[in-house]
Length: 154
Image (tube, rainbow, N blue to C red):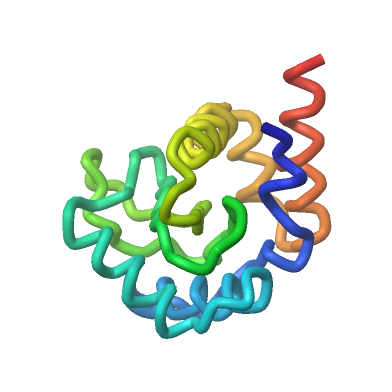
């Protein structure tokens, strides 16, 4: 799976005004609507529903919220860096400031799992996370994410 096929440049944002998981999911849903064409309200509801099954904060300030929706034609990512970390009920109890959400088709099966594994592996790199946290330019964040995977794969 190609990381740049998963994440569009316009799906990378830096947010300064998010103070809760609910507000974050609203912002994620609005960006996801622009790249998937699915109404933000449907994406928001689905993210909330998935999160109610168990928190998607994976530790070290990182969250990987994900959902499957009808009408989506491919697995799509949205990356957000928060200027102020928020509580995310992560297992390590650390607040979250790096979020990579995945919106997938209902029948995506293994593609959804491959995308989740790719994102998880990528964000496990402490050097990459430090660079992401030190940068406020969405274009640079996109380049860091897509180039990191390319150079690691080579």
